[in-house]
Image (tube, rainbow, N blue to C red; front, side):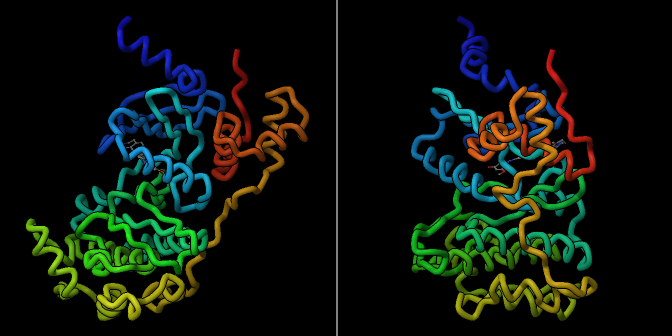
Amino acid sequence: MPVERTTEFRAEELYKYYKVYETIGSGGFAKVKLGRHILTGEKVAIKIINKEDLGDDLSRVKLEIEAMKNLSHQHICRLYQVIETSTQIFMVLEHCPGGDLFDYIIAKARLSEEETRVFFRQIVSAMAYVHSQGYAHRDLKPENILIDEDHNLKLIDFGLCAKPKGGLGYELMTCCGTPAYVAPELIQDRAYIGSEADVWSMGVLLFALLCGHLPFDDDNCVVLYRKITRGKYDNPHWLSPGSVLLLNQMMQVDPKRRVTVRQLLDHPWVMKDHNSPVEWYSRQPLGHIDEDCITEMAVNMKRSRESTTALVREWRYDHTTATYLLLLSKKQRGKPVRLCPQP
Ligand SMILES: COc1cc(O)cc(Nc2ccc(C(=O)Nc3ccc4c(c3)C[NH2+]CC4)cc2)c1
């Protein structure tokens, strides 16, 4: 039997609910295809993972999926549905047509302080929320930040995130992340606090946005690690004194001297021209049930509102979860809360 039919047979669950179009991204053990949810008409991104290619990375994917189920925030790419077959895992994700921040910085060479501040406030908002849920991202970099259709940032790829059992203040040991963004304490293989290591990576990210290149860079890994552990870097002449100071406070080699995410929320550099602290609370808290979406689903599924609410509240990340979350997304973007009844 030709491979396509076999593949299609195993993925029938996907094609029942989604139109699947071209590949829009690929890397590592996954590729991402553009899709459309048939019932709401909403565009989605479908991350397709072949289990055979994973090996022991399967635990990373499972970790990311569990983390995504617990993270619902305006600056984190939303997980809508997970479909697992014997050979593949499909993650149906929020559509972010602006591509990633890495390509955006390359295209603009570097960003103005004003544009950087708007983006950086969104990153601080996302990270304050992630930490408040007891997670550390541990792989923050421009490639893991997408731009949505409203030019807002969305954090992705929680494949390396950690949720230490003893809470975020609990020390971690596993070394991970992308070298140029990794904090010195991880390089020295010392016990570290995930939130402190994330602040270092945010500092490297802020430098990349403002400067268009990395503070610590070298083709030779050993030389790069030495530069990071020394923590010395050159500030380009165009940086304002306020930017130089904030970068210095974030890229402190001693994690105990480093500014915290909480301090970033109302840091003078972050507040400039905005005059208000960063809003980090989720605008779509988990567990919130929207009555309009329930009503539309109940009518479409010919069920009572009570049984529809009970079904949604199970948060199985199946087609019911996807339909509810995509209806909610339509409502939040001012579109009619309507399902397209199927023939
Ligand atoms: C939790 O969210 C995740 C987690 C993860 O591990 C990976 C992703 N990856 C995504 C990658 C791309 C997109 C996406 O929507 N990309 C996209 C969509 C449309 C277009 C483009 C990119 C670029 N050309 C224009 C059209 C969404 C998630 C998320």
